[in-house]
Amino acid sequence: MKEAAAKHNGGEAFGHKPDQDQERFILSAHCPASFELIAGECSLVNLYQFYDSVQQRGVGGTQTALPEHRSGFTPEQIDLGRYLFFDPLLSKDGSLSCASCHRPELGFSDGRDRSIGITGKPTDRGAPSLWNMTFLTSFFWDARANSLEQQAQGPLYDEKEMANTPAQLLASIRNNAHYPDMFAQAFPDAEGPSLEQLYTALAAFQSSLISLNSRYDQYAHGFHQALTADEVAGLNVFRSFVARCAECHQPPLFTNDQVAVIGTPEPDGLPFDRGAENTFNSPKLRGGFKVPSLRNITKTAPYMHSGRFGQLRDAVEFYNKGRGHAVPENQALQLHWHIWEPKLSDEEIDRLVDFLGTLTDESLLPQVPQVLPSGLAPVSAQPGIARQKATTITTQASGKPITEGI
Ligand code: HEC
Ligand code: HEC
Image (cartoon, rainbow, N blue to C red; front, side, top):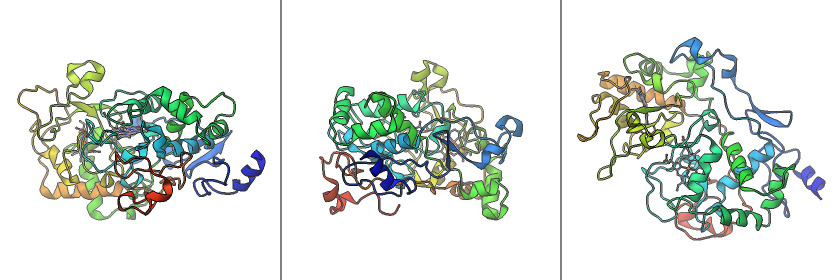
């Protein structure tokens, strides 16, 4: 039975196979595009791997190497993570999946200033994009998690987010008609399903979300026609020592994976967010946040940790309005030394925005599962909506299936 089923799906590429062959969910034995199967594991293949290290090229250079990344995942683990990521079964009441707040069509963000969790109330911060997570070493705006596995336990068990408990989560996976078989496919040598395997699979899937083939990248690899004159002008402002954007938003990831205090404003009426001060117990980092990647930035409005800026141009203009202009009077923040007064012209700000628009690449968007092992709809369009079957949600105005337009 196992062999016959595997054969049935065997020839099809990752993500383009039927989700279910009647009785079983057969996990893909193929790596996602941009990965090569080497010794049973998916290895990233990318042009940047041929370049020298960041250190040797200086900040802002186009042909710089990528930092190290997470690897060692099998195709089956990545594919299991894909199902889990979209499955609302992971939340306490079956109403929210990871993808409810990290929506593929919104750059894996959710279009909200602050995310809405299971209670229908806003959480404290906005949902970051999940592209290129594989290269990062700390997670959350305040860098409080050191691995994707640790990170996932935040939303899963946070009362304001998915509000599950480890015991209930494990029971719902183990009692499901399909997941035990799928975990066995993904982790053939271990007892399961276990929560560790679930975290690993989620990490594996997220490590496959690669966005490194934008028009900017084509330009970086030597195809100079890929950018217009205005966009090149914007790139030059971006990496100039006047604007200093590339000091923190370092190519090719457009983040240096560090925390910086830049003094962004909170939404009106909300208390000051101490950010990384709490994580590192360091007053120097009060109001410090992780430098976000700017890849696919046109998809992930609103901007900054609490979505204060609705437009990309406003987020860019923030840097031009004077060092510390938005810091509340009662807060003495130690602003990063690269935050200063670049006195950019309106024209230069426009060119920066033009340039940021070249960082879009969604060619490796994963396929959203049509059918989930739980039978629930892959993404709940509105948090708080009770359990609904995949078959009914597509007919409802609020339940527009996320698979459309991908
Ligand atoms: C209720 C909405 C919501 C749900 C559901 C949710 N997230 Fe998030 N996610 C967020 C928010 C908000 C943040 C930022 C929180 C913070 O920094 O304090 C975040 C942060 C992250 C980060 C860190 C990104 C970075 O750049 O540091 C990762 C990775 C992530 N989420 C993955 C997941 C996974 C995996 C799941 C499912 C297990 C999930 N999220 C479920 C809203 C959500
Ligand atoms: C000192 C480091 C530093 C420098 C220099 C810097 N940034 Fe940032 N950038 C950050 C940090 C940290 C954040 C997140 C702040 C927050 O959420 O409150 C951020 C956020 C952003 C965002 C919003 C991203 C998102 O996903 O919400 C944009 C856009 C941006 N920066 C563009 C720029 C541009 C353009 C420049 C140059 C004019 C620049 N940055 C210079 C550190 C820096």
